[in-house]
Image (spheres, rainbow, N blue to C red):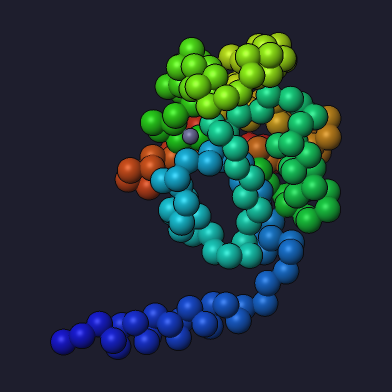
Length: 181
Ligand SMILES: [Zn+2]
């Protein structure tokens, strides 16, 4: 008994899936903003039933928004206004490193790596706030969801949902359901 037949059958499905016409615009018209955590790779999208071509996925450390005109909002503006995303999903996760980071340890490691103290001191307004770390993963999702909803560059009729993901079990918990309009 070998797994050859399973592999060949899987490969046929894989090739058929790859032959699905893909466009730059996401088929399900959704934009996902989540964390860069390694445990979410090849795990969050399958847990949501999303396949290649379905969604635009924006990631950073901690699913945080520091600058209301910065990179996250810029990406969401493009997703919504240029590529037709009609829903935004803010997805934090349990056991996020950004809820556990110790700024003093991080600063020491940066200095040990040769980063000049002046470069750290130049971060605005300081390392801690520039880093955007938090203590409460739930509070962070609610805060970021509100920031995106209130951003004048994001249309009011685009629902912004807030969810929590468990990188161990793969379960999604709905924290806030976005409203249309
Ligand atoms: Zn994280």
